[in-house]
Amino acid sequence: MLFAAGLWEDSNPEEGPLISYTMVMTGTVPGDDMQPFHDRQPVLLDANRAATWLDLGADYAPILNAMPPGSLTFDPLEPVAG
Image 1 (tube, rainbow, N blue to C red):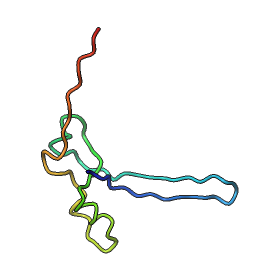
Image 2: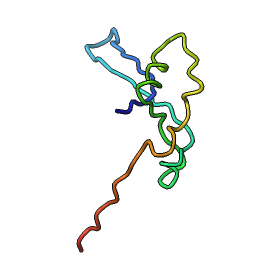
Image 3: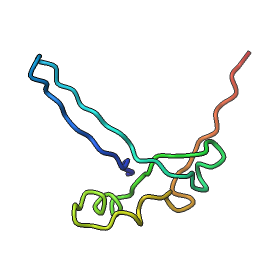
Image 4: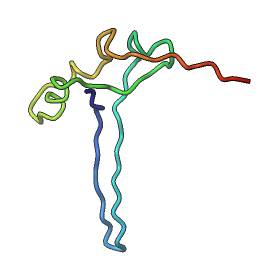
């Protein structure tokens, strides 16, 4: 299971019944698994890294990078019949 490093905030303005949630994911340079597809990627976390991310007293800087090679796998697309 993977988690995405991000920040969120909820908002309930006084002028109406609107409840809004805002979320932003933290990004990094692509790791070996993502580099063939894009020049950046979200910070993805395994369970140990997620625990660090959620610990308000932890030094989270060491986990704000790509997962080790082989952490992500991709299935090739099937050719589309013409």
